[in-house]
Length: 195
Image 1 (cartoon, rainbow, N blue to C red):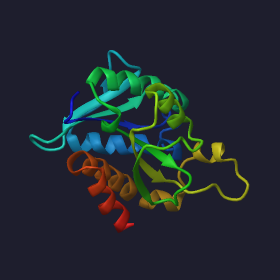
Image 2: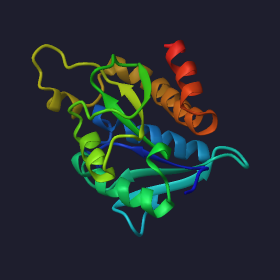
Image 3: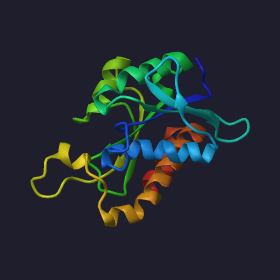
């Protein structure tokens, strides 16, 4: 398998209607990574996704950045197809996603685990046959009062959150690069101790 290649999937829903939603923060992060690599997304021939490819530095690991063309709850098929196409094992798949169980502006990195009610993760676990991939969990906080979580994640970030959102997106992109260049444990030490 391609040991220096990492498949980095930013979860979200397609189209302008969802682009600024909390649920699309994963796609915001892969957009930031594509900008850093100086590359853009294009339709992939073998998967229902848009991809961008580049290296973190000359001779550094290759990042295949991906955004599904389908909705969040159908993310698994494209992830599985891309992992097969690029010859990437689950331990070189990084899924960047919104996380209700973390306060806004917090990041947590982990490998493996369940879906925690997240439909995108549920579909990826099903398609890959397990949950042993890596996750960059981007905190979006819990909905206020009795608001339905499904409604909350499909709302844009609040005005106060939008002020610090670019920093959160940059930090999540930094975390992806750290995982690819230094490994998960080193990335966790850096990210979790700075929180």
